[in-house]
Amino acid sequence: MSVTPQATPLITAKNLWKKYGNNTVLERINISVYAGEFITMVGTSGCGKSTFLKMLLGMEEATSGELLLDGKPIPNEPDQSRGIVFQQYSVFPHLTVLENVILAREFEHSPLIGKLFGGKKQKVIDEAKALLESVGLTPSLAKYPHELSGGMKQRLAIAQALIRQPRILLLDEPFGALDPGIRADMHQLILKLWREHNLTVFMVTHDLSEGFYLGTRLWVFDKLRRDPHSPEAYGANITYDLPVTRKKTEVPQEIKAAEIAL
Image (cartoon, rainbow, N blue to C red; front, side, top):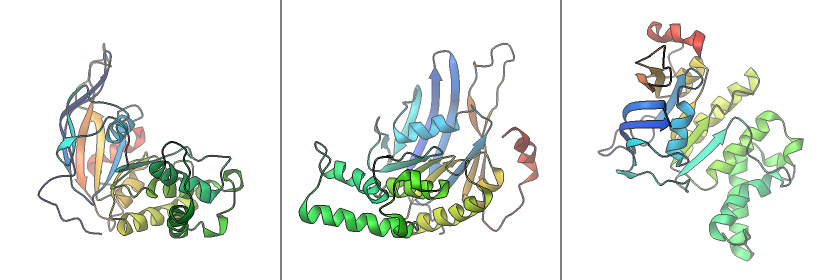
């Protein structure tokens, strides 16, 4: 899917800082992301990638600066516009595959009791079945999470995130625990869903090759300033913002040295 920049960015960060007490995690982040882009994020552990993802979701607030969605401050709690998938499967063990997916829709329509009835219930069931078919889980509708493989659980988690039709999909190392063969299948699946659902994707990964293969832009998070006597004084910035294409298979030399530390 090609991305044609619109007049207004979907996501904008302006001089964004995030601190926890005296610990500066992110500093001076200035970026614009347009609808339909696929942003992959790499960097050493603890450099703020997942913190930035949580700020996009609304789980964390900026210490200073601005993080905007459609030109307005991002709501300080998750909402329907943003879905997230973690490395650890966020599924409910006591519900079947189908029940796991329809639950989000039920609470959206009926927040007090989390139940739907009649025609509304059937409509949500039909939506969930169609989505589960798109992620290859139709044969497993009645199974429970403990009966699924790791790859199937991750497909289920992706379906859970997409059932509410988010504009933005946030992925926090979603494939890190999967075997290489299953990861390759998941790469094809997430690219298929990105195109079909017109998603804007932000994905944290420790795998540079994965980042270059999946993304339309790759961000490298690292510290531009360091104080050996006060390592928490300075935060990470986006030191590289690289446009990439899936036709590339080689990691550029200028960041290849960073791969050892990821």
